[in-house]
Length: 325
Image (cartoon, rainbow, N blue to C red):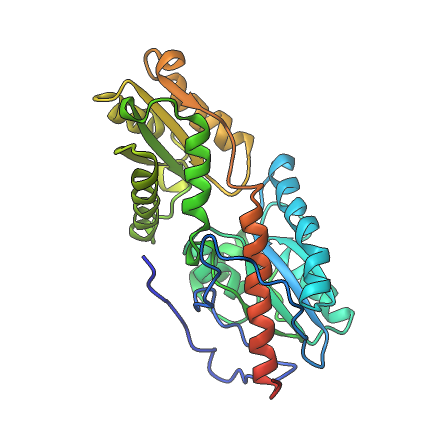
């Protein structure tokens, strides 16, 4: 589903310093291909003060939040040394502080001229396409405005110029991540099937399904497992564990065992344990027939390398926009 979706800046918003230019999250920046050595040469930052904001969904789970803060810790020194950015922060879209608005205000207070937003989201959703652009003032989506108001999420248009990188699905790291986790659990591919459980999104369900299908094809070619099922665990299915149960049973109809893999950014007890875990426990003989590890995409060194790469390419864009080399 490597379709590129883009949006022009809001009318009246100029692409100049001191105004926001949010180039929406789906502009392809040519992420590093799987197996390609990471380029480590430093990239000179523009004659300005550039910050990086790692933006994620947010969660009430401390375990989940710690995984995203750990990602910041793992990339911060490399970004400041290799890409010459002046600061790196993490923002949670909802449920907890620091919020996107809080972190953008800090960048403004400290005199940053540019902020590179890195959305740590799997693929397009109403959050990435509507909510975050609305929060930062680059889009006026009426439904998002009302939803954010009801949920108490603050909106803030920064003084700094802001650009956004692509989402995770513009790289091949999800395929390699799921393959690695499947290999760790598989013992006999001929007797196994795989259930991929993701959050999902009502508006963009087709995009999510296409992404998981790409993952399935990648795993099938390299591991030899050919039976797959997909399930959602988010608001699309009202957080219903039965959807996981149904997907597992579909695999077990003609396979001896089902490997269940959460396609979720980080571990949240509500999802990996209460929803997916409960769905698995409803399957007959699940202890003998279901293989499940309640893990997540993070931690993953490839995600860290992806952050470095997309920020590096964004700095090149800023240099070019400012007339640099």
